Length: 245
Image (cartoon, rainbow, N blue to C red):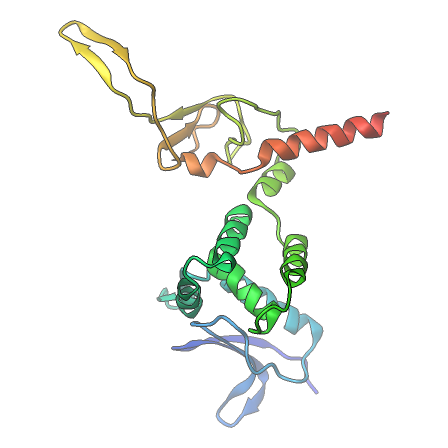
């Protein structure tokens, strides 16, 4: 039997992962299907090599991370919505504790709520949880697999210095600098014929334009903010100090 040769077939309603070395009628043998609406893989073939299965799972996860957004077909450039069934089901939860918990978890890990909801559906097999222990176990499993944007930044720039005032949790995602940023702010000034006088407090938020003072990287203030970054830096420094004792 020949080794499988993976072929990714972009269809109208989803993606079919096929083996180019085997035929099933007029088409290649299907190994798995990923519907665009649910992003829950279906119809796994009973036999396939581990490397091919890993390749399929990695491709599926990359698309699942887009849940609630869009996916671009790399061959045709066609843009298709993905995970819209998840968006609908999550919206139906209203203001339930489950929806609030999912949204908060998504915010912490920098992923979409639909992606967290999808993982929750896969974990519970779409059954109602029997106790709070189910939430705790899922939370632990999710944290083992995923890292927060702050954790990714600290891994990329391990020598990042701490900040504890206006620049808490802020850093340049391009160069890691935390020295200073140019942020577009709004305020109310007193204007006279010969210039400006006193002004009220300046205001800015995550949508404000922001530029790194070191490398010139541009974005919004939200792009430069990594929740929990300084807590991680402090914890790492304390851990290093304990090791030195």
